[in-house]
Structures are given as C-alpha cells and as structure tokens.
Amino acid sequence: MSINAGDMNDLVRPDRVHRSLYIEPEIFELEIDRIFGRAWLYVGHESQVPKPGDYITTQLARQPVIMVRHTDGSIRVLHNRCAHHGSMIAGDRCGRVQSVFTCMYHGWTFRTDGSLVGVPVPEDYEGTGFDVRDPRNGLGSVRRVHNYRGFVFASLAEEGPEFTAFAGGALAGFDNMIDRAPDGVEVAGDCYRVVQQSNWKIFLENMFDNVHPRIVHQSSARGAKAAQERYPAGAGNHLCLETFKLLALDQSFMQRLEIENYPWGHSNMTGFVSPRGQDAESIAYEALLRERHGAERAEQILSRNFHHTMIYPGAVLQPSFQQLRIVKPVAVDRTEMDIWVFRLKGAPKIVFQKALSYAIGANSPSNMVSADDFESYYRVHQGLRGPGSEWVVLSRQMGRDLVDNGTVRTRVGSSEASQRNQFKAWQRYMVEEGAAR
Ligand code: FES
Ligand SMILES: [Fe+2]
Image (tube, rainbow, N blue to C red; front, side):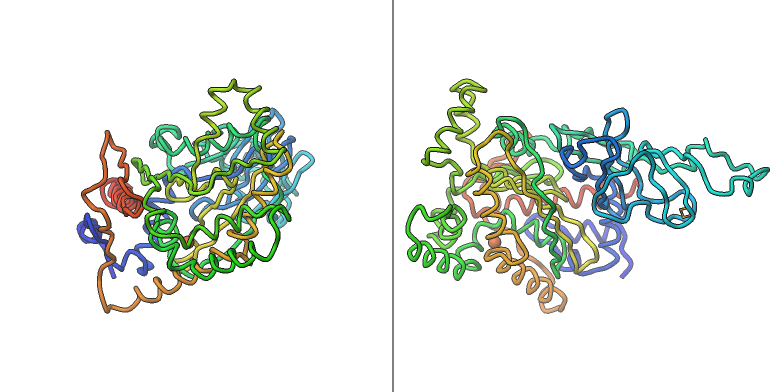
C-alpha cells in the first residue's frame, strides 16, 4: 500500500474510520513519525531522579532517551545514543552514575548534560579534525522539555505548541491528583510493563468507551460481588472490588458520566466511584487538606473525581487511583504499556493501599479487569485484518454533544465523542500538518 495525503484524509470520516488505520504497517510508520515524533510525550517523574547522576531510560517514538538529573539540579532529557557508533549509553531502566556515563562499547564518556568528556586513545584522532568539545560529539539533547508540577514531558519536534497550550483542559486531571497530595506526589516503585497484541489506538479508544464495561467485564463484576459477600466488611480495603462490581450495573449508571474532549485529542472523564473514605484515616486526611488549603479549596479538590485523563497519544492518568499508563507503540499490532503508581506524600497509608489494590486488581499483568479488555483489543485487531467490512463505526450520540470553543462535552456517557476527537487529532497530525514533514 502506498499512501498519499488525499487517501489518508478519506480514511477518517465524521462517523467512521477505515480499518487500514489499525493494520497497515506503512500508516503505523507514518504515525510514529508524525504523531509520536511530534506530540508532547511523558518521559518520567522528577521523584525518580532525586539526586545528580540519577537517571531513568525510556523511549519517545523510535528514540531511546535518558532522563537524568544534572549536577546543577536541572533535569535533562538526552538521546540514549553514543555519538561514536550509536550504542545506547544506558541499558538499564534506571540507575545512577557517579559523574559520567561511559559507553559500554569503546568507552567514550559523557557528562550528565550530554557533553563529551573524553575518548580512549585520543592520539588516534590527532589531525583528523575531531574535537572533543564539538557538541556534535556529545549526546544529543531533547530541546523541548517541560516539567509540569513534577511530571516531565518532551517533544521531539523542533517546534510546535508549548506544553500547557497543547495539554489544555486535560491538565485538570493532573492538577487534581497533585492537589490531593499534602506534600506532593512521588512514583512508588517500578512500573508494571505489559504488551498488548493490538494496535495502540484500540486501547485509547477503549478508555472512553462506556458501553463495553457491563458487557466485557460482566464476569469480573460477578467475581467481585461474590468476593465482597464472602469476606466481611472491613477485612482489608475493597475499593477495587467495589469499583469492579459497578462495572456491570445498568447502562443508565454509565450514562451519567461526563467526558470533556479538547484539541489535540485529549479527554477527561468523570469517575464513577468516589475515592473518599469514611474511615478514621480518610477523615483525618481530609482534615489535613482543609488545613493546607482552606475548607473551600479542599472541598473543590476532594469533590472532583476523574476516572481517566488522557494526554493523546501517549499518557492516560487515573487521577483518583493515582495510576499513569504510558502507551508505547512497538509495531502496528503490538503495543507496550508501562503502568506507574503514585504515592500522595503526607497522606495516610490507606490512600496508598487503595491505589495499590486498584493497580493489582485492574492494571497489573495478572489483573481481573484489563485482561477482559486485552482480549477485546486482540479480537478487534484480528477482526479488522480481514476485508469483511471496511469501516469502524464511531457514531454513538453523534451530533448531540455540546461544542464550546474547541471543547466537546458529552451529554451522556455512552457518546463516542472522545473517539471522534482522537481521530480528528489523528487527521490533523497525519494529513493537515503531516505534509510539512
Ligand atoms: S559506540 Fe560508544 S564508544 Fe563506540
Ligand atoms: Fe474495560
């Protein structure tokens, strides 16, 4: 398949998209370049690199990167690629260097701002024009890096919208999670890493699909209900069971959810289970927030409940459960996902226990809920490979959403407004502005 902009434009229609968007390797490669090579993507959290020399590694589009704390205290995002023969400098997921990164292949050494310190056998380069001080011989830096209240994002594009203008209304979800923390947030441990056997877009669409839960997750909801009946109330924290049980409720329950959609494909969705507890620890925690922020502001923070916040195309936060899922497409039919859990510093133990219990039950590799979804994604992907039907229909509640200055608000939770909004952004990246690349 050889695709031009006109063809691609025709693949996204107001109420449907063509199946080739999910299965064509050529489209996938263009997405990596035009969407992931350009959007602001999550790199890491500053709590992962508290001291100079601390680093983590990840990948932005096809570029392996290192996020490192430099000696001056700043956070740098460097290309994880030696300027000599290209070897990755850091092979671990995280670590700490005393003062320099040393390439494992021929031993070139680099400071934590990427500049080259030295090479072995320097006399070999005498008279060749090679200069240790030439920045081209250092590790490349990602120039567009933004630290949003501790969350570090980067864009590989030379130019484009500033981070806060790009993320827009979706930042409300990040703000809410951060504001719930009396002393800031920090990453708890390492991430779960799972691989989905399906195209990356199928996962993002599912995040805002409020018709599937009571069908796909029916058996998980039944299991959660049975477990709650078997174990007496108060035996441990059962927020996740409570949540899973609700997944199978009547559709009218899901219809009450609100989804707000913003330019560049982002969305926020309200939560269906309040994270507020009535136990003594939770009551003390709310009192502490009132002390910090005043009663009115604390109530504003505590009464907002976000189930999903998506910064398209790579980050889905669950603010009320303190989880962040990062989407890293590997191939047209393979999507890696890192799942991070955050701790609200200064909050009582129970707040973290709830987050962990949700992570284990809903997001870990052995979970009860995403396993249902992964099977659906796999089946969708397999189904779309055949030419039986050319289109994927996205018209639920089409024309009934409220549009206000670029923001699209759903009237009912089952609307596919987010999915339509995601493909509007897709089209903008791939077609309207894609031609500029
Ligand atoms: S590839 Fe890094 S020193 Fe040769
Ligand atoms: Fe689901």
